Length: 293
Length: 293
Image (cartoon, rainbow over all chains, first blue to last red; front, side):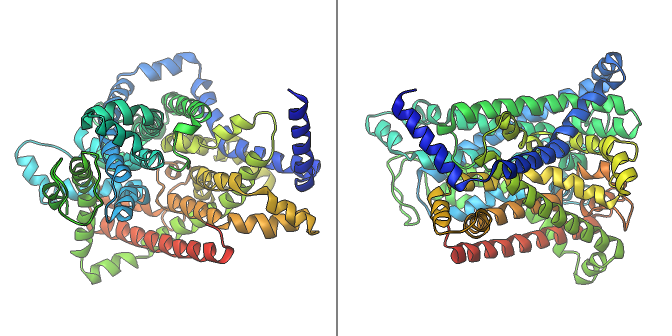
């Protein structure tokens, strides 16, 4: 550190002292924040892992390798593998249309994209029950062709897509708006085609934002409970996702097994948070300015 | 509403309509068309289904369900608990945002990352963890019951605690970026003019943050009203006591009472939209009043 820098930081420190709080107030406020976060957020996370291993490692691995758990894991992975790419394609298309072009009704379209965030998960499930249920117009028609949507995998996928609908679009739109379209215009005027411009110019610019959106979308897709619970019908081995399997085990008084399965999802949450923090620390400039989801 | 958009804007042709500005970039028709079709199929059509089902109930049946004592008790609990949780979250969320932005202490970045935990942790996992912690024989539950005589687990208060867990990051993440942007010179001016620190904070900083605080409160509240997964484990779900509205929808669906489920869902959506609209108005008012955008 040079002398000038030292002087600058010293002056900064003096300035902070002039308008900051005293050490006691500061300590009390930090302690209060730490206590609240510890009790409200950290304690529940710790409990998951403590309870998962509380009955021994044997019970833990037995719960994880039971056929019902494995089939639930398979279904959860399958649902996320369909829902996340579906919303990824939508997110990119919506961001391209909204960020690169000027047209009327843009604000209204943005509001519509946000709509699923305002709807309760249970209501999100309910709308698909109303659409494809036995009392609806579509349900019996599809049934006569042998297509089952409700209480089957397609219903779970649809509900999950609905719940995670805005995640990637909401991340990409502000980012691409911020970046403008001059680079794409340059590529087009130099003779590149539309797809070539997108893959060689736009995509590299938004890749970290895209990853960020995919990460959050995936976490929600794998963890969704309310909406999936309404449309799944809870058929073990067939329409049971990991979160639903946790509920069944918990109500069967198999708390240790429930927490073992829960620790898998808690691990997923921790990995999500870790990657998210790394992205925010390293590539803050290439993520959307506002952290809202 | 989607079909005309696709046919009116074929790829590459110069736009005829005046509703958008011309651009050299290709793909407007394709991307906007895809966006509108996907949005309509996944979000708008299913939500329209709910509106149609609700409209076909008729006023008398609708009001009979809405004023059923069990339904109004559940709605009151859902909105009341969400309100209470959002108030607590607003107080502690602002405190946490303040500590994270203004102070430097070891472990601050870990704490910052931990705030997002409720976004990443599936609600079912949070639900069984909170139920274990706050059960009468749980770590916090036993303490609260023996020392303070308060029963949190398996009661209406448990609902509030679960909603505090899911809603906290909304307040922190909305207030944090605004607090980072606040010009510290105004604080220095206030201090120079003789205001004490407390007065500077309450009269200079908090008013500037007010719109963001209100937004955080609204997001936390809206999330709490619809929350299902984390609540059903910690509350004992007794009618008139700790039964939330989303759970009542699930119960009505299990009884194949689609009319009842639809009516409750519609009431929840309408109240939630009205409250968000009022909060938007309040925000616009506070922006004007405090001259902050």
